[in-house]
Image (cartoon, rainbow, N blue to C red; front, side, top):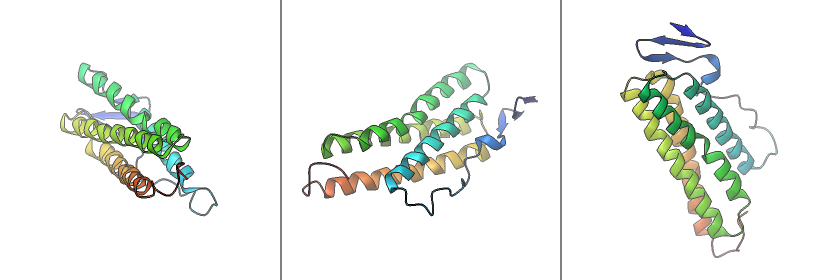
Length: 157
């Protein structure tokens, strides 16, 4: 059955081209853009792909419930990261990054539930889980670096 740009096959979703979580165009690779701006762009891209993924989930009680949870947690890290970039202190920076990290971790758990409940195909969700893990590792490294550099100045760079 096809609805819009999604094809449903026995409870699984075949992703349309716009819900692809695979490798994205490397538009930032050879620019002078600050690494923090590139991370923010990746988080925004992740959020947009989560939005599109949620739009294609089955319209069942479980599908609606998990869709709302994934939508909330999957779109939260980008604005939290943006707030962290404007933090007033290093402690505030770390705190806001930790919130973004928690939201990413929660999103990955909800995404795994989608696959196990057979509400979405593993081929659709696994790239999203991988991207979420990569972003989690980046934020974890940023938190560690900020904590390690805490004695050097009071404002994050």
